[in-house]
Length: 117
Image 1 (cartoon, rainbow, N blue to C red):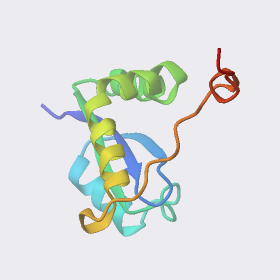
Image 2: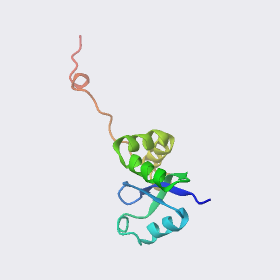
Image 3: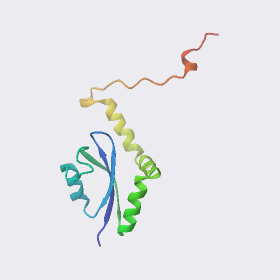
């Protein structure tokens, strides 16, 4: 019994995603990391952020197609909400724990131009 894996990669270069399917996830991931895939060559290094296993290749293709759609991307964002929150905190914390300033909070025009009563 062979599994077909549908996976989502996160680019550490541009923050974009790549979604694909394969029978050998470790080998395919190594190919992405080595730049052996034309579609991901210039966007690595990569991190596997999500994968699923299917028993049927047609099911895997359908799932890949879904995960590439707007609804599928929303599903991944919701499914990995804690991961993305932690990743955002790490980005604000900066390298070596030095920290960088958070972007300023957005303020409504009403808040900026209030008059004393």
